[in-house]
Image (cartoon, rainbow, N blue to C red; front, top):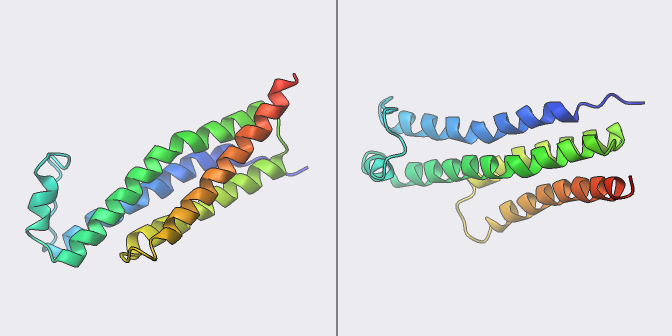
Length: 151
């Protein structure tokens, strides 16, 4: 019987969601002589101030990295819920590990595609990767729901 590592995937997902944020900061610092003002990065003028100090493509990459970070944090709740419900239902470790691993791999691909693809037509690949990761979460939730419904 395989060991269930699925719970550990929750903090791993959080770290994967944080990586684009760190990359966004690195991108701006690299284009702005190492400058990054961390005193109020969520102010309403923040993006406008950054945009005026870096090249346009750098700013667009920064925006995409920031969006990938926000999307990761938004989807963390769905992923954590799927993992917790799967464990509560006693789903097989192999199923939980496979789905958790698939979501983590898809999240890594999603981050790369989101940050690097600026073309509108190619950006639909990102949507497909996102949908696949959400599908894995729904699979676990439905499978757990079916088990819990008959207990």
